[in-house]
Image (cartoon, rainbow, N blue to C red; front, side):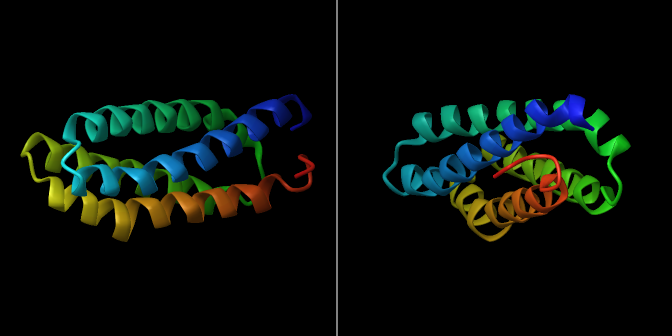
Length: 123
């Protein structure tokens, strides 16, 4: 697992940044800054895909990673719901999904990974 320490650290950092971004998007939507919200949401999706891809080999080797793997899948599914809402120009729905589902899920994933990686990463 030592070979993945940098991946673990970077993944946690990206998730922290994602939480900040996800918390900001509903505000942008409320202020009718839809293009900014779309761009930031795109950045969040790219960040998540990067984390997901990077963590795949880590989670395959880590003991007790089943919960984190399930949470990654749940976040992925919620991102799909956001994309569908955005495609339908349902930005109030986007904001609600972010506030009620996606942001809490990413926070929970971050907490799970922090705990899982604690023996390897000094936080």
